Length: 71
Image (cartoon, rainbow, N blue to C red; front, side, top):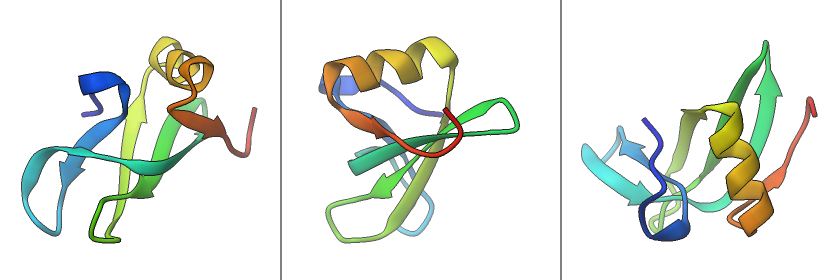
């Protein structure tokens, strides 16, 4: 689950099995009515997280992420 910890988007890293890993270069896409944040962690591993509409719009307005496809 995505979190707004420290202002940025954080998610679970499947590869390293750690929670609340900060997501770098986040892009939020809308697919089938779901808001999906995709980005990378500090090691370059791909990450993704599903957000609510309010959370997605909040991260975009704060500059933590940019709009992707589907808006």
